[in-house]
Image (tube, rainbow, N blue to C red):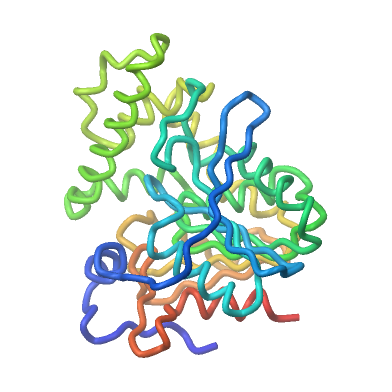
Length: 311
C-alpha cells in the first residue's frame, strides 16, 4: 500500500490533527448499545455493529474519547463494509455515565479490554484489535503482558504513545498547550462528577493541576495503585511489552505527530519479534491520516483493512 500523503489543504501537523477531530462527519448506521459488567461490579458500554459475521474487530479509542468519535465510527464503517462485525467499546466513565468504582480508565487498564475480548469470544471465532493513541497503548500492552485470547488474530495500533513519559513531556511543550487544556478540562470535570458520589476521592489538589503529568501524579497514579506518574508510566508504557507480542501486529506512528515523544519511534535495532511491523509515515498528525475523495475512507482505515485482511 502507498505511504500516506496528506491533502494539500492539511499543510501542517496541527491541522492534520485538528481537522479530522473537529470537522469530519461519518454517515453510518446507529450501533446497538450493550452494557456488560466487570468482575469488580462496574460496567462497560459497548457499541456493536452486527451483520452475522464470524469475524469481529474490537476498536479502542483514545484519551477522553468514546465510541462515537469520528475516527472510531469511520474505522467501524470501513470494517463493517468489508464484512466484519464491529465492537467499539467505551472505557469507564467515557460513555456519558460516570462509572461506579473509584477507579477510572488509564493507559494500562488491560483488565477491561480483556473483559471485552472474553465477552466477544463467546460469539466470534476470529477477533482483531484496532487501537488509537491511548487505546493503541492499551492494545499493545494487552497483547504483550500475557498470552492473549486464542481468538485474537491480528492487531493494528495508530498514533501510539509507546513511551508514556516521553509523550507526556512532548505534550507539555508550548505548542501543545491548546490540546492539554482541553484534555485537562474534560478530565477534571469527570473527577468532580466522581467526587460528588464517592467520598473516598480526594480532590483537594485538583484546581492546582496544570499539566497531564501533574494530573497523573495526583490522580491517575494513586487511584490505580501506582506510586506516582513516573511509576505509572514505567509500568504501563507499551514499549516494554512489544517484545512479547505473538500475533501479527502493525504499529503506525506519524513522524510529525505533535503528541509523541522521540521514544515512540524505535529504530531498527529495537528488540522486537518478526511479527511486529512498524510504519513511520512523514505525515498524519495525531489520529489524523485524512484523505479526500476516497469514498469517505481515511488512509488509516484502508491501511488497517489491508493489514488485517492479508494472509
